[in-house]
Image (cartoon, rainbow, N blue to C red; front, side):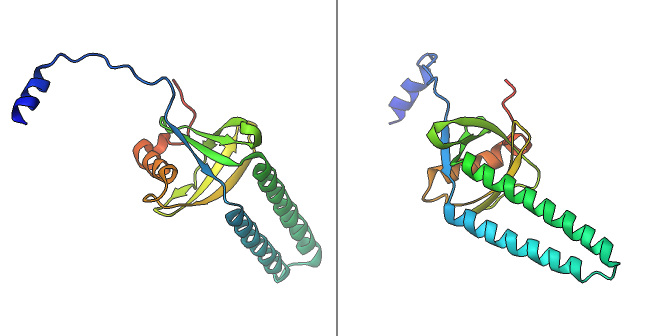
Length: 169
């Protein structure tokens, strides 16, 4: 064994061919987690409206605040549902770049926004498309069972603040 190691150590180093295909993996969006997220968000939005009703302010101001609140909630709902129709998976590349994969394999670049969190078995990713629309994706996984989840964990820890940002090369 020692002889083999010493012989290998003295062999000239050659440039080995590298694959031209980038390393990447896809995390599939879970419809159950999406439904859970929208249900919880709906409950919290209604609770926010209930709190506005309890505020000790004139009725006209209360009506104006409630209208503004429910308009913002409706806009968030619309953005989230549009993104859910637009994205079936999140692609993570070896460079730390993130892409949204749509139905039919259509790929769009997305940017990770502040407020995203990746924990050992759950992740909350806030993503922005090139058209500036934003949405959140709740993902769950296990690194010991899923290569894609391991890639997410590795990219999150290895690339730091550059993770999920467009490739600048």
